[in-house]
Length: 405
Length: 107
Image (tube, rainbow over all chains, first blue to last red; front, side):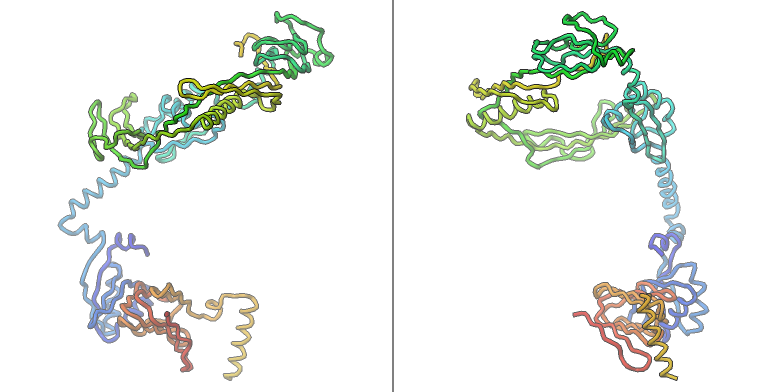
């Protein structure tokens, strides 16, 4: 039996005297009466037992010639009898009321089913749709929130909201490629995603509008889908594949082009780093209207250079306005460190930045043909210029009428 | 008669060994769990025979278990379970035929 249950039922501390106390204890245990904390006190013993079992030990005590005396009473039933009864009862009622009250709010939102969308985006949209942490449960109209969320997030195809106690479980289903099938049926051309010189052109469906070796510009139609309507020159007859496809209007093909990238990046010869020292101070503020009440923490921030990371919990009214806000701000002390990189270090850093930028532009599978790196010092910085030639797929399917890439 | 009983007991031992049965259940033996020298829990005892702050004697199916130590307190006693806390110094089994069993004493 746990201590909490013993306290709830109430227990007695009894003193046992006699020559056969061990026999008495064993007989009681045999009757199903449990003793705990049995101690030897020189001339007598002390033990604890549940208050409800006390009547049952008296006949056993007589039989074993053991004198039993109550030396203490503990537990809830005795607390409720004492002079502090009213205060205890009031406290109990308030406690239960508080638990009930707190249980009627949404304290946590769990989002399941997200794949491509970030959780923060969904939480933000939920907030705008009428579901947020700290809101009373009965004010949450799950159907309305579901409908509103679908309107706010067109990338979702289904939303389900369930309230389980203090937790709102939001299940979302994102639109899949299958739902884009309708878009697949729209007439589309293959256009150039970047400027370049065509190295290879394979038309799977549609009409080629450019030739190999031709320089093209971003947005220029490379393969036109059937059905005409494009103005670019260089038209040739439809491919046999396209003829077999019959009614299809969507251009398909592989277009590889030689693309030239010219990138510049610079790095200072003297680098300044600002980083956290590890020292931090926290301040809790209760914000009611325009008034801030500091609950704990320093009044003035004790750091000269610092950054703050706030975290807040807001209580909102029926129309969504903030009634009060509990804000916890952590101030992190910062230090400023200057590091001299020198020409070599700055060049390495600038070149790394230029290559990182190049990586963002290159299409996966691109083949690098050649590169040229030059450098110069300007305004206490090293500027690195990177010229790279690559062969990559520049074909981009564009639905007719949609804006240029 | 005694020889026959010993023979049966030996067969039961072999059976329990062969079938890997828990011996405390099969032979109605007490299960004694010692946690460091701070706590002793005994299941399937036959009753508290004596107790003072230094010594506690428990009846077993075939003898007695004597726990010696300092500041011994019976943390819990039920019909067949008992927990003793304190600074345990020795555990001694006294078997029914008079021969003392192994004496366990922490260093």
